Each structure stands twice: as C-alpha cells, then as structure tokens.
Image (cartoon, rainbow over all chains, first blue to last red):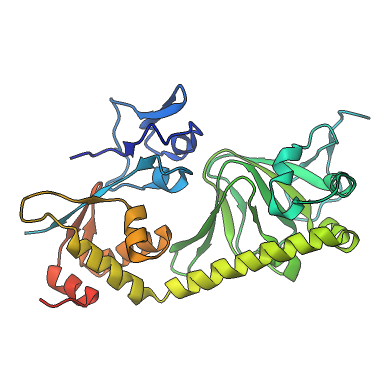
Length: 71
Length: 246
C-alpha cells in the first residue's frame, strides 16, 4: 500500500509547485521531474494534506485513497 | 531615467509598498497573458503599464484579508495564491486557486467595497497590481479594457453560480457516500484506490467539494480520514446518506 503520493513522470512538467507547497518536504525536483525523497515521509500530519495534488497543473502527482470498512 | 525603479508614493493606508516598474522591467508577456489585457494595442498597453506595480510574496504570507478595503486588483505572474473565506467558527472555504494569468480582488475593487475573500500565497509568488483609481481611469480611456473586464467578471459570476449549485451540500455528499461504498475492497480482496480528483469526476462536481464532503462525513462520524485511507466507520449511516438500501 503506497503511503506516499504517486508521481507520473510523463505528466510532470517540472514546475516545482508541489515541492514548494509540501509541508513535510518529502518532494524534490531532480532534473525536470519531481521525485519523492526515499528517507522522508509525510510525518508532520496524520493525514494527507493533498496540497501537492491540488496545485499540480497537469495531474502528475496524486494522493490516492484506499476505501476500507472498519470491522 | 531608464532602468530606474521608483518606490510607489502616496499609496493609501494598508497597502504594502510595491515597486513601480519602468518600461524595461514589466514582464510584458505575463501581463498580456491576463484576460484583462488581452487584445490591447501597444499604445494602450504602454499607457496602462505605467500604473502597474510589483509585489513579491513569500509562501504562507497573506496578501489581503477578507473585509479590508479593496484598493487594488492583483494579477498572478508566478506561483499560486489561495483565495478563501473563513467562517465565524474558523472553518476555511477555498473559493479558487489563482494561478499565473489569473486575477483576484476584482469584484470588491469595482464595487468600491471591502475584499470579499482573503488571499494567501501557497508558494513563492510574484504579483502585479494596479490601484483602483488608476484602473478606473484606464477603463474610461480604453473601451477594450472595459470589455475585457466585463468578460472576466462574467466568468467569475459563472463560477459562483456553479459553486452555489454544488453548495446544495447534501446532494454532493450523498454522491460521495455512494462512491465510497461502491469502491471498498471487493470480494476478491482487490483494493480500489481513488484520488479526490477521480471522486470529483465521478460525482460530477469540483475537487474542492469532495474535500468538504469528506470532512463533513468525518465530522458526522461516518468515516475517518487517514493518511492514504478513508475508513468507513459507520457503514449503515453512510448507506443512508447515499440513499441506498441496506
């Protein structure tokens, strides 16, 4: 189960907006595309803020949710 | 003198000092990409440029507060600005995100009133702005500018009407509840994963409405939002909201 945002490198245009808005600093611009820092995680919040997904102009970074029923 | 910047003088109260840009410094392409200035002749554009001042804003900085006198229209050159309202109990409602080429604070400037929403820089932002008095003078001189402004305001009205439609909250929340119920783990153990954008497309609404609906469902104890999971905590109640049989 992915606990980090999912990046589609084909859609990423390297604008870096997601890097700027990320409060947990888990995103980094390498070359012309965004990547997730392997040694970081969204540790400042108990839930995803999804701001990276919100600001992305191309839909390259997404925060997918799994829907489960609590037993 | 060419190349010299002049600090704006005699600005009204509450307006942070900006820098009036000379002809060499205004990013012409940035301005022309704004709907306000589209189709203007070079002469008209050169005249209006002289009234434009630049404002650099750090991430997290509030550009303007809801309720303060509206004294300038802002145009985003780079970065993203969150336009939002805050309720009396402190809840934030995002109206839209202003990106390069977009303007904000238009309506209260033309209305002569108070800013209708607050604006916060989500990233490092560069803005161009024009004071209300200078804009009014330019509108009287240049009919094309006035026509452009009419189009901008018309689009803004359309957006607001759409938001009002969506703000019939229960309708959207019911659709979101149904989407959640239809996308839980299926009998094969396969877990569906949805983004808010996908949920919005499925519900036929804006992405912002999905966030609000999920928060409402959480406040009502029907779901719990975790980092990458939406946990249905009261399935029967959620089914009721969705309007589906048990």
